[in-house]
Image (cartoon, rainbow, N blue to C red):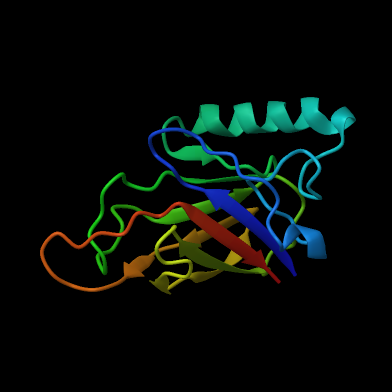
Length: 156
């Protein structure tokens, strides 16, 4: 199983230090270069070239994560809870992952470390995990919204 943490702060990119999951061998997308997800220095040119190529093919659609081997769809800056996102949420994996690998998303913020998600599992096909009807479930009512600060991708 592989765990990747992606920050999703729309005002600016945030960097966080390694979480407790890193100390147990999991990969964290927003951690420093000492993380197991970060490539060795000789692979940096390949990673940067692959990221630039993919983002050029899909301008504005994909955002970088703290993990150099993964990109994801940009989340809207404001979205009401329990509503379908305007488009399918995608996780693009640049490293070799076999088709059929299960991917599960977990999200949260500073107030709620584990937000409730609906339709948060997908299978990898051609290095892309596509979540067609991903919903952030929460309290209903006027003005209710969910600010996602980090998103975990669990591959098994």
